[in-house]
Image (cartoon, rainbow, N blue to C red; front, top):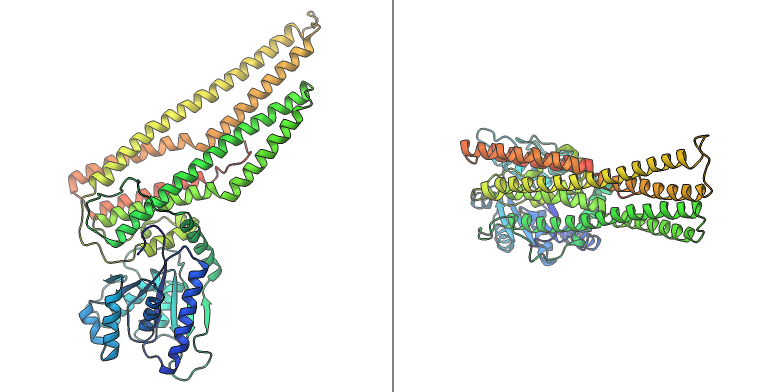
Amino acid sequence: METDRIPLTVGVTGHRAIRPEDEPALIAGVKKALNELRQRYPHCPLVMVNDLAEGADQLCAKVALALGIPLVVALPMDRAAFEKDFEGPALEAFRSLYEQAAERFVVPPTEQMPDGPDRNFFYRQQGIYVATHCHVLLALWDGGPGTDAACGTAETVDFALRQSYHPLLSAPLLSATAVLHLYTPRDVAAGEVGATRWLGDDETWRALMDRTEEFNTLTNPVETAPALLPRDREPDGPLDRMEGLYQQADRLSLRFAGTYRRILILLAVLSTLITASFLLYDEANLHWLILICGLALLLAFFLQRYARRSSCHRRYLEYRVLAESLRAQAFLRYAGVKREAVSLLPWTQQAQTPWIAMAMTVLGMGPAPQRAHDVRSCWAEGQLNYHRAAHTKSQMKLRGSERVVGAALIVSIALYLAALVFELLFGGLLPRLPAIGEAEWYRTLLKLVLGCISAATLFISNYYGKMSLSRGVEDHEKMAAFYERILARMDQCGQDENLLLLLGREELIENGNWCSYQQDNTPDFSL
């Protein structure tokens, strides 16, 4: 499966007993649904997650493979135990489809394991897993109520729409899964077989998928990016996808950050030019400068419009959130932690960027990590060194900005004092000292210089203010201290899972805080 784009993951649930006469209509309905998803989101590679149960699941799996869609088999229990539910042609079909799958694994339980769990418990856990690890759930269902076993198609639809289960660990608070219901009768048909309808808030779901599609359209192969994890590690499908997408999100965030900062600089320059040209037009009677003022205003208008249309500021922030979330998830998995990082995302990030939470959920799908690697050097020490270096760099930028703004302010004060002295001595402000003949010319010159310097000071201050340099210095200092504490605890306790989860949680919180105060720094003319 691809590692450079976020896949559109389609889950499947449905009845095991399908009337033979309904199969052609259901096959056509599933094929139509998958093709429509592919056409609407051409840059989102489709993936189907399925347990290959008899009936609806096997029907959907065959359609997916015929359309070239990779199949991920998520079993409720190990293969040998699961095969006891099959016999005859259904068993042969299961084994054939299983061998054609791109990935295969047994789902972990989401809820508390009871004493002596029966098979229904494991089927319920499989339904919860599929419903919460896909973008859209295909439900081949008659629309009827659930059963006493609480592990059927109706319950799986409810898991997707209302999260009606009891997770042992915290789970994302937002449910972004949409359900596409294909009417599938059990006995006598009460409607058109294969007819489809969307359940849940499909408009919101489409908006989130549009953001995912937007990200995927911007990706391209990254060949020279520094490795997030050791290059000699063993192959791991989910980890390969996380690392590949981290490289994409990191590259795109840096790209749009550069665009955003260049726009801020140009807006500051144009704003100063507008002020200076208008002052010269008004005070020095240089009438032709009204053309320069108008041209600068026009350029500033189109520049601000470009900033809005390119969404450079939003993309800079969102792709940074995606990159940091993927990085935390990759390190946790590499360390052998089974818990998914999406469950650690703060509520503010889930609410502000739900498409990222949705992407993190589907990217966390896969077999549990098989080995636990030491992440002290590549994660904790690497982040400590990063925050120390970033703290030093931010301090230098902050001091430089303070010097520039301070120098501009001193010049403004000096010019004001010069104007005051001029008015007192030569401008007639004191009755005993008459004004000189050329006082108005000098007065105009002082107005022009003072106005231009004051305007430049304001716009430079606005530019540096949008960089949030002082907040960055403070954040890097705090995070460096945090990693020092983490490393000290690792020396004492080793690579404890709770310590690693704390590390991941604090990284995501810090990234959420950074995003929250950066959101107000949009590129505009505001002072």
